[in-house]
Length: 265
Image 1 (spheres, rainbow, N blue to C red):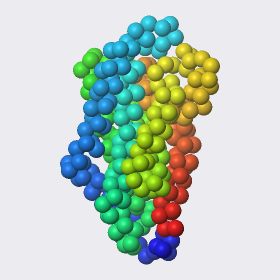
Image 2: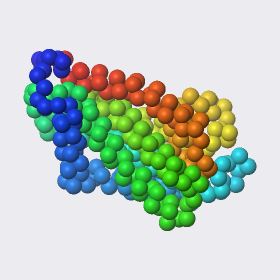
Image 3: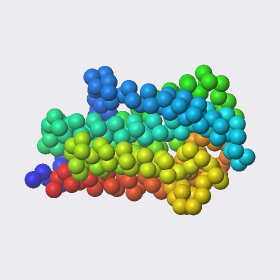
Image 4: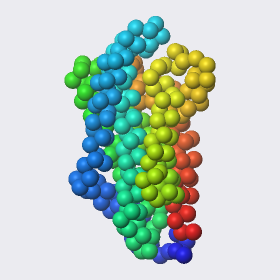
C-alpha cells in the first residue's frame, strides 16, 4: 500500500511539478497527433456545419442575432475547450497504461501536482479551439459587437469549461484507470452541452428541456462566452457565467481529488 498523499515528503514544489507534467503532456502531443488534431478540426467542423445547416434558425423572432456564425462559433470554441479538458485526462490514462503513473505514485511527488498538472494542460490547450473557431468566424464575416471584451469573455468561458471538463474526466480516469472511462467522459460532456441553450435560446425551449437548461450551469457559462458575439457584454450575464463556474468547480474538483486519493488505498 502506498502512503497517504499528505504523509509523503515533497519531491519538488507543487507548481514546479505541475508545470513539468503539463510541459510533458504538451510535448507528447507531437508524438500522438490523434490527441491534438480533433481539438482543431472539431471546432472548425461544428462552426461550418451548424451555421450552414441551421442558419435559418436566426429567422425566429426571439433569436438574438441574424448571423448564424455569431451563435455557433462561440459554441464550437467552448465545446472544443471541453474536449481539450477531456483529452488531458486521456493523457493520464495513457500514463496508467504504460506504467508512468506507477512511478509517479512511488516517487515523493506532491499529489496535488498529479491533479494540477493535467488541469494546467487543459487550460493551455483550450486556447487552440477558441482560435480555430474564431478564425473560421472571421473568415466567414462574423461580427463581434462586444469587441475586445466579447473575445475576452469567450476565452474565460472556454478556460472554465476546459477545467471543469478536465475535473470530471480526471475523476473518472483516476477511478477506472483505462480507456473504458472514455465513453463516460464524453457522455457527461455531451449531456452538459446539449441539455443547455447551446442550440436554441431558452426562450425557444419548452417542457423539460427548458427546465433542465435553466438549471444547467453550462447555459450560463455559454451565455457569458457568447454574449459579445450576439450583442454587448453585460455585467449580469458575466457574473452569472462566473458564478456557474465558481459553483460547479468545487464539486467537480472534489470528485477529481477523491478519485486521486483512491490511488493510495
